[in-house]
Amino acid sequence: MRRLGILILLLMALSSCEEEVTKVGFWIKTKGFILEDAFLNPDDTFPSFSHRISGGTVVFKGNNKTYEFDLEDTGLEDYEFLLPAGEYRMEINNPPASIYGQERGSFKSAPQHITISEVTDTIIAQAEPNCALLLVKDETDQLDKELYIIERHSISRNYVRYYPLSHDTISGLYYTYFTPDTIPSNPSAFLWFYSWKPGNDEEGLSTTGFDIGYQYFITVLE
Image 1: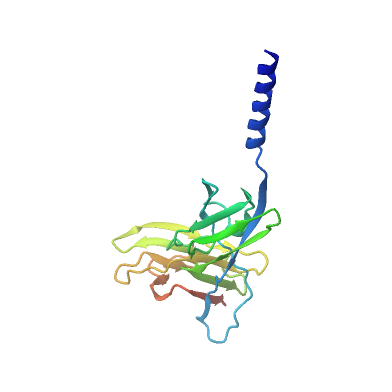
Image 2: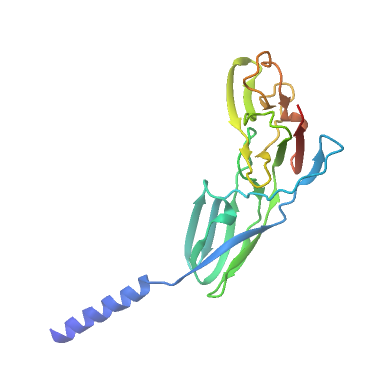
């Protein structure tokens, strides 16, 4: 019985060691997320702006296991990953930006093989943008913090939904990453400056004139 008790304790100890696998903490940084400048006002110089990268779903396959991280509400570069050391195939599934805009930029990324070791701190992921970026500078505080992309369908003009642009407190710019509307004959996404102003129900800038891969800068003067 004594030998049996020792054997059971030994098996429990080994099981405990197997469960306590040391994990390595690391970050993912992107390379290649570059948007070309497109000027709506030719005399403007493009402002300095730090990109925010959306998260999506990140999957690591290796060590005969699959580890999946859902970063739907978190930026890719803002999340600390924890994985056991080893060789992995990393896949980042990042859905295209909404045509009505969002806080972080979307991208395409091919699967890549990575190595996680005890000294790993940062993994570099290639990221090709598949969105556009709109930056708006309110030169004289004309907007009163009311700037949107709106959803409005020509077949139902009484239905309007507002998607506010985000505000970057560092640069003072309003911004949104978006996929340009692709239906010129029946557009539904419009850049909208003054939702409160009477008589503007037929106005707004359709995003069908914008292109993926570009960043657009607009200065509001009056």
